[in-house]
Length: 244
Image (cartoon, rainbow, N blue to C red):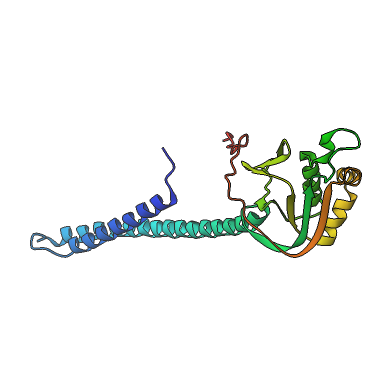
């Protein structure tokens, strides 16, 4: 049989209580002497039988009332659990990028070189590449950034940074240099993370050699919007145990 929901069980118990109450009332009326109960012995036997029946029904009624109270208590407990889960989800939304955040942090700008030709003869030396942006963003995350946005677009754990030529493809939108990155967090710690990251150091060497733009400025107040796209799981699924 399919498992009955708490609401269904509550309705069933309530209906059962009403039926038993009605039965007790009928039994009480039937126990009254009528014109057809002429013999005293027959009347006494009937009263005793109805009393036994009434005691049985009262006992069943007490059990049903206890079951109803237990179900109502379970519903209240589940309501409290659901409320706690909602509060927990609300608290995690800013870290998942699903809520707007504000606070101090850093503004980082990356831009192509002002040089017309590269000393090596390779024009790729003079542009910002995908790995340069990724190195900066990853260093910011690693140094305690609580939220990051590129060009005003919020970055989430599912965001993919891709470069097409000398443009950036992010969440289906195309961005051209300069690339402006905003990170909310402790500015001093974020600066220290950028300065000590190995990939950022390699990028800094290219900045110095090819005159690329890499500017880092403290910000007393940043406002980063929530991510407005759709986050869909491609490989994850809810695990349901088959153990009995």
